[in-house]
Figure 1 (tube, rainbow, N blue to C red):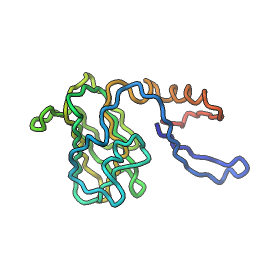
Figure 2: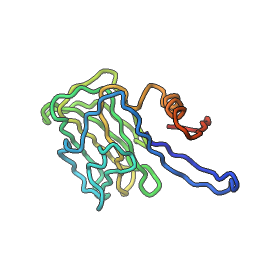
Figure 3: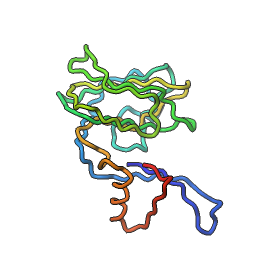
Figure 4: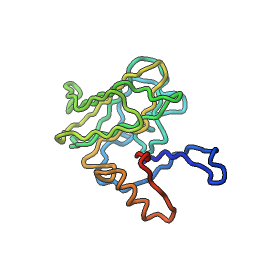
Length: 193
């Protein structure tokens, strides 16, 4: 879970800074995409980026395309038939904006016939897609189009069985997790996860 916070100094409230905090929260669901299962991507990474960044478990790293082409396709072999009911897509900003215009998730057992299981208009920081019914597949393909000629930055791609975000109410879950921390945290109506 990644939190973005705006921090203010008590003695100088006109000065502020933004920070991202990554919390490693125990997973309720079972994750099924791992870096060693990536088998195809039609986009070249920006220098210093790699496809593994999209499945390394950290939303602070990202697979960043080099910006060429209108669409990006990433396909994973899941290591055999896998059943899942959750899809999570996280995006990072490029040049101050989210650049994924559409996202389509498809599944296949043989890479010749594909079935669409989710479609989004834009991704933003995080999209948690709960499928109505669990699906079983050997391959999963993510296809993205973009708004501008800038690259896209895919922070994390996750398919899982069960809720991998820690519960049904992220705000309440976060408050209960933070209650066990030694540091004092406060929550406001404007706080989002």
